[in-house]
Image 1 (cartoon, rainbow, N blue to C red):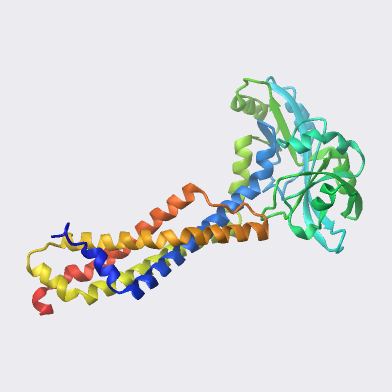
Image 2: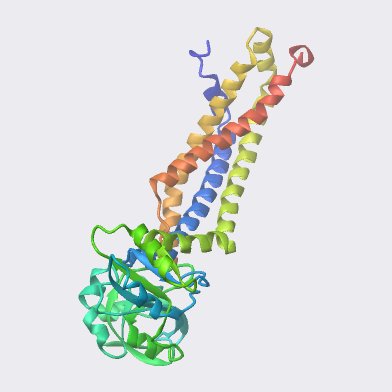
Length: 384
């Protein structure tokens, strides 16, 4: 009889309005989880994009550094000491700093991240930067991130039209001669790349011998971890040697553990999960309460509790899948809207969709397990 009669489906679809309200509630919970997880992943992805563009097997930083926008400088002597270690091919200093950029059209100022390096070395894994690196040897020349927020002005549009483009950075007039793609992050709305000498010209209070990070490239076939340990043993404790992956994890751990942002997004995902449990529980509980006499009749006929449990779980799975499906196109639209407004990498991934679907199924099954307790406790003699 159970196989012939889709009782769970018939009960759900009997009251269409209530079913639609339930699906809307589940979709809302899914959208909330999708958005929070998307923001959290965008936080990690955007904050580590500069790290991932660097061509270096090892990175030297100060142990007092917290993140890419809160680096502590150290002497470049440590970097050149590492050059003497066997297996190291070449090294290059990296300078980082936030400074005000004045919009050339509106004259409004906004903080921008500046990366300075030796243009004779292929530090960045960005063809546009490497092909035009010789331009950075000219005084006061910078490259502008075309994926920066619109508040910095129509820099990319002007340059692509062949117009001469200049702006004020930290009160100093600079010329924009090329573009690159990096993207905004939660810490910086835009980025500039320039030479080490131009960096010192922009940041007049900085010294060339004080660097924020040291990039170490190794000879082909060399074990990076082995060289890292050798450098670590040779250098004093005023610097820290990280692998490229460790440098990325260093940034992620800062945003995950040392700021409230990562916690807030995780909490938002949990709240969406709890909201979904409450909504589904109310729907299934109401359905069980409304059909309690019918369930009691089946119970008196000899049907066991596991039958009713499977029945409620079927309803929960139907609700999970039907509520999940409409959330996908809505979230795709919201992701695109957020991406265009913030220039953050908020994109849908297959892994995230699978995770949210699993969470939705778990959410609905938990709700069904709680709701079915009323049915298990029901005595046919009491009901009739």
